[in-house]
Length: 498
Image 1 (cartoon, one colour):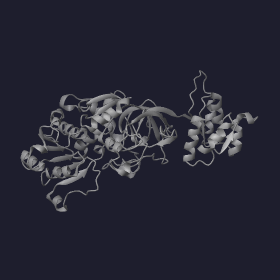
Image 2 (cartoon, helix red, strand yellow):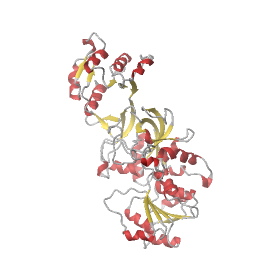
Image 3 (spheres, one colour):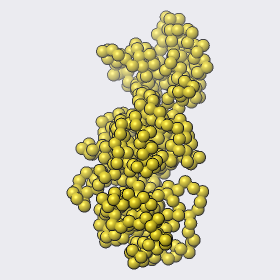
Image 4 (cartoon, helix red, strand yellow):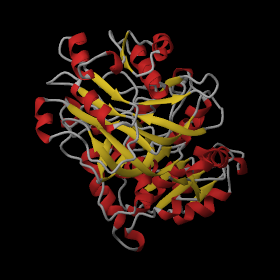
């Protein structure tokens, strides 16, 4: 009763009212009771089939049945033990046999459903700052309006680094599967999913788009009322539960494993709301499209959609990580005449030149404030500034570096601090403006496909330089090394191959 006991424990945790255990070993009932099993059926004790016994016990059949033994005859009994109209059978046992499923197609027209629960390798973090553990995680089938994806490539962002460390107390939900920048293939879809099917090439998007709410129908925002990004949410929208479970190495008990940013991509298989999955062209290279899940879309989109950088304009970018360099790349594509990069790491200028940066300002090299340096460089200030470091002091410098009368500052960095904005209301009356950008103001499902196509085509200055953002490529099992590289400032984007 290994898997069976773990399923029972999960059902007990979810407060199921009746949990029936089936086994030919009567000793298993005593073991199962602490896990939540309320009734025990030994097939040897009954002349009638097990499914008939269960239907009598439950008044028509159970809502859910789980086949954990890997026996096709038992699978048939499990399927028939569920209630017609809505019963769901989940296969967990492995069936090493040439036999086909012992079910007739007509049996499914009674409303019963059959799915398989998958076990895949995932990088689980069990406590803040602890090393990731690569282990087998049970990944439930997708429920209504959900999608299960096989991840092929995933990369690491500073948001993952912050969540791994548990820097924000409200994000300290463990065990958890982090990751939100990835690309893969649809493995299966849940009920009601019509725009995706098995085999589709997709990227997960942390800022979802249902397409039906007031926000999604408004062209002026990319924030969905139901599926917008929420760094503190750790469960699925449909039922407030998780689709992952794993055995705790310390206790040997199977526990729920929580989600992250609507995506959880540090996993061989993951389950997402369909609203958080964007289809990409089948010819697109998945290892490059992975970058569109977060950093590239966020940075390029901030230049294109949020600021709407124009040809001949001047730009300052504060913080030259992947997002900041993506802003520069977007401004270069829009033919900005001057793009000033601001960073305390002088090595970033060499990399930044590839993305269009024309001038570099290192705050350590100047006695005066950065905004004064930039005003001198530009004859009064830039047209657009972008704060990508998540630092409120840098944000103030970015704001003051813009030209009075029309300057626009865009916030992209996340500020995990109780501090308020370091601005006086009167400073806004000089005509400078301050806005924030989420996912580059792209509507993920409806607009990412065209952005992906744009990234695939073009030459020279008319092509988005995706290759330049990938500094390292490692196997998935080296995820802890990848986090070290990012934390030490040695990696821009580290691509993990699953």
